[in-house]
Amino acid sequence: MNASERFFRRYIFSTVGIVILFLTVNVALVASYFVIAYFGNVATSNFPLEDFSNHVIVENGQFTGDAQATEMLNKADAWAMILDEDGTVVWEENLPEELPRHYNATDIAMFSRWYLDDYPVNIWKRQDGLLVIGLSPGSVVNYYLSFRAQYVQPFLFGLVAVFFINILLMVYLFIRNAHRVEKAMGPILDGIRHLSAGKPVHLEEAGELAEINAGLNKAGEYLLKKDNTRADWIRGISHDIRTPLSMILGYASEIKETPELPDQTRKQARIILSQSEKLKNLVSDLNLTTKLEYSIQAIHMQSIDVVELARQVISKILNDGIPEQFEMEFYEKQPGRNIQLSGDNLLLQRMLENLIRNSIVHNPTGCKIELSVGIHENSCVFVVSDNGHGMSEPQLNALNSNEDISSSQKSEGDTEHGWGLKIARQIVKAHQGTIRFFDTVPHGLSVTIELPIE
Image (tube, rainbow, N blue to C red; front, side):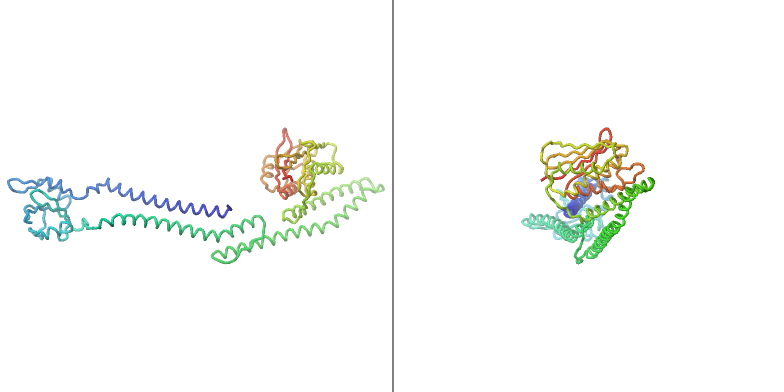
């Protein structure tokens, strides 16, 4: 699963989460309403007919309502009457003047479920008559609903089905829109990833996000042009400086080897020769790191004997000459075992040589340098270590996190640009390997390189 798929999957999950949260909040609000209504005495807000009827009694053939009955009517802004079997009002309390005092069976049937004029009414059957309670107009709304029994269950099922169909439809539309955005954003995210890796980008400038695609294409063209200009400039400088540098080296060498010249002049020639060699190596490092960075350097893969490779590097460094305060050792972790890997012989030699010379350059007072080779699992392991000054923790962290640093180690009187370690790291990367930097005990630096073996 790539980054864009993970992003839009999280987007879809968050959308579903929002829907669930929406439903949960609404259910909680509805439940809160009913709880508040219950504790707010809504359940008993209807006029208490039976209780009121108990406060209306018959004494000596006359209906009489006590003080509690009167209080209940006044509190509810209601009126009351009792009808006998003939529909005649035999008792009343707060009954409006405009209402009749006699009702036939039809009138009673009509207002028993609906309204008496504009007054919503409730009725209660007593043994001695029919109690009618009327409320003020607009205080209560009465509706009469009637369903055939066979339709009740399908109706409830239909409500539930409609609810879930709407939820599923909403989720489907969210997912469908997210998929459309994913199809449009996928190439853009891939293009950004390619730009970060320094690869060329060309997106189709069509659709809803055509402007973004066009902007990425322009950015890719600009970065590619900038990188090519930089690489061309470095190659040109390296080429142009090679001829005058060769002449400086040649003349300086002749002056140094001429015995007729004064010792001071020959000494100055040696300094010119030494600094020119550094300049030559600097240009070579600059050219090589640029080629590796922009994948211009061709990797000539071949089968390499690792032990022989390490011995050649040690021999070359010793033949070039190193100060007497340095000691070098080479050993095999699995003596006698044949270790083969596929790689570029010249680049791997350059990698080991840079690491060893890094220890020499940054420990001018001398140190012991060790180079070992061995096998760990499916990797060939090179270890270059010394017991010199070592590195500070921030510098180690910078190297192990692949950060660019101006200098791996700094020593007095010497300026090092860190390209030796940078080139070594680039060569390891080109061979699909890993490189790590460690402190040694009690002091010094250890560099471990793991490369896949054949």
